[in-house]
Image 1 (cartoon, rainbow, N blue to C red):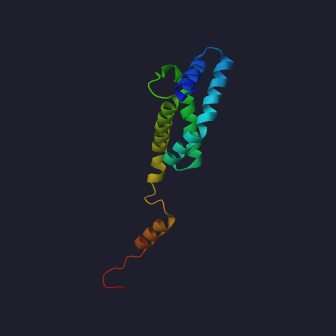
Image 2 (cartoon, helix red, strand yellow):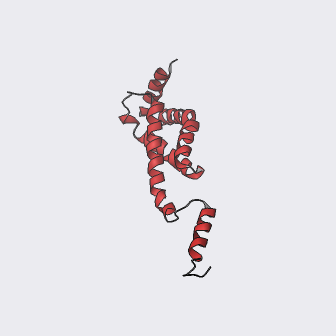
Image 3 (spheres, rainbow, N blue to C red):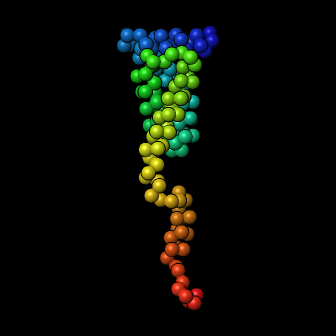
Length: 125
């Protein structure tokens, strides 16, 4: 069975009004795409906990918006785009905390601090 036919069947089951059938279809989608979606989120976020949060947000957003999925692309492609959007948004929200510290490397911060601490005046060595 081709991926497009499989996607169409899963999407139809996930869109169904039946709670248990929808849950089973969503679980099947989640289990099949989770490893790849996590890797995408990890590459964009750089931290495991942020990647897990982004992945969770992505699957929730995808399952909530499944009725708007038009089927122009494969379901996996659509969910990857949702994951990329969620990971970038999460990373952007977390960025200001890091921007207080100009360097992410502790030794660079230490060297910069020591240069600021020692400033000879005039002819003093």
